[in-house]
Length: 553
Image 1 (cartoon, rainbow, N blue to C red):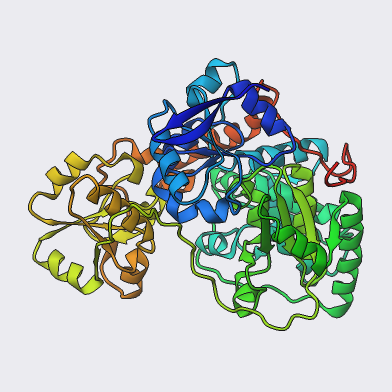
Image 2: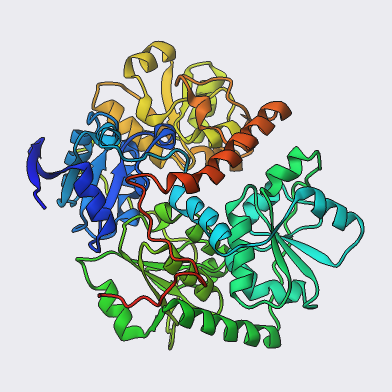
């Protein structure tokens, strides 16, 4: 396999062709493909296993996404314009095993390889494959509504996160995130004749949630809600809002049965349960990436977790492997505190086929950490100093009309709620000259959820001679203080920013339903795309072609 070396701003990097990259994706060695464009551009078209890491986010996210400094990192964008800056930055903060996709995404397409639109595509495409290969049963929104109206013996469980459930839910549904289903379902449906309907906002988590219960050996009949709450709304039915139901705790008898089934699931999928000695070998191997994940509820994690372990909602790990464990062929260890939930997540990760998967059961724990650990930022040593402005100072500037506020968080977060008067800009598309022009004689203040991204953008602007400040505490601090906010996307200085909105972000019913239809067609169509050149997947669905995995062979 011939590899050319090139020099980028004094940094040596490999030059890999599309064909070579595909070979590496299909191989066994660790590799991560970083797409440096903004999230909206990434969602328009990207390599299947590429990970969205915009240039402005590298300092903030690279260490959590790529723990080992020795990882082969392949950089790509549309035309190569972002690669030099990214390569230089990564080298300065410690990553030296760098490569560049020859021709970028355009070169990938010109080689005849498929590109994909959307987010979390590997996981969403997997959900469609599961439904087909495992023949996961489903129910339509119309039939569900009719059976609910008749008072039939059934329950609806929503496999999304509690935060998503709070935003909207099917009336009467229970919030049970997918990784919690096998652990808790017997409390909600103790009668094995009760029909269990699993729903989400679209398709994937409905399918994965239903199949989770089936694979776990739950005796109840189980179905997914076809097309989720999108189908429910398109049928003209109403949703509830603002509900925060508590999760039921499993009884001793039900927990014992769930553990028995979980143990069988681990055997069927070939997941190794490791001890402390094996865990130390994995996490002390600096040449490999080992993700240590605690997949319990956020509340449980905050109350006490193993030092160095990251919280990741179990259902979301399955839903978004490219976000939580982006290095292909890396190791993943799931902490098993109850004998059930870790098995659920581990079994799905094995079937996704992209990683080595292990389960670790904590023993003789002496000390636990509490709370959510601070984010580790690998700051560019050549970056200018930060320039902050506190909340009270910004309030005074706004009252005197002497502040121009720009929110650089995601467009979806901005549209949901932002500081009154703030404009929106995609961080990676900011035009410095336009910023100077629109801010006029006012102080330029950038903000984001916690202010960290805003600070990174402010420091990059400072390198270009533009004076700007980042809001200390970001939007979160502003919202907590009860200061004025608004919603919508009425003030955007980035053309096309509306393309970053999701289907549920539109209030107009006709537009929303059209977006629903487009999304559902896209998701179902992923299966056909997987048959195209360059779209190799290692999926192995339980009960079909799955064989136990022997790591290291």
